[in-house]
Structure formats: C-alpha cells, structure tokens
Length: 179
Image (tube, rainbow, N blue to C red):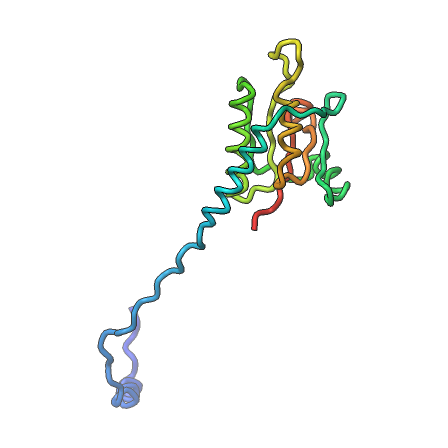
C-alpha cells in the first residue's frame, strides 16, 4: 500500500490539472493487421504443371556408374556441392520412398518438392533405398530420381548422402531459395 502524499503535493497536483478536460471515447478507426501477401496462384499452377510434365517424361538415358549420385546445376560452384556432400547444410525435411512403385514415387517426389518450395526449405533428404527389393534391374527409383531431379530448375545440386544418413540409399538435395 502506498503512503498518502503530503497535502501540499496533492494540492499542487490538483492545481496543475485544473484546466485539463477529459476526452470522450476515440473516434479513430482501429488499425487492422496487414492482409497476408497475395498468393501467386497462376504461377504456382504453372510451376506444378511444369513439374508434373518433367516428372512424367521418358526414363533418363543417363545414369552415373557406381553407387553414388552427384549433380550440380550450371552456375553452381563446386564448393557448394562439396559442402552438400559433407553434410554441411542442415536438413529441413525428408521423404521416404521405400515400398513405392515408380509412379507413386514420382507423385510423392512432386508433392514433396512442391511443399518444400512453398515452405522455403533449402536442404532436404530423399530416401530412395538401395533397390534390394527390385528385380534384377537394380535400383529403379534411384535411377529415376537422378533423371527427375536434373530436370528441375529448383534443384541446385544433389548427391548421395553420408553413410549415417542413408549412404547410397538416400540423396541430399539443395533447393533454390523461393522468392
């Protein structure tokens, strides 16, 4: 509880406030929060159509020999790929394609990459497996991913993951920043 101020202080305060008038309620319009930024619906639909078209193209004719995959888009520095290969980027999302056939894997990759683009995710992991369950043809999804990802403008680089992150059964993918 506060002690009462001395009478002379109270009198001085009242004298200072004598000419003050109270105002009624404000007639100002309250400020509203800013509306969300516009959604680029048409450009997103166009990008989704291009992605679907690219992913539905013929099987890739090229496939790197050996178990590991590696790619960097034109203009991307070798040091970026080296940093990716060493696990130098923080993984922000991942998708596991185990048990999916080629068509379901293609649709899942398209959905996953579109979601990553919308959420501005930069480095992701795609787990494709080593193809041990595939018939004698080897790792089908791995071979498909190599071709699919090379066609996408949003992919800066990709490479096989480090052993602790899946090795030759997974890819680190570095995506272009949105915006």
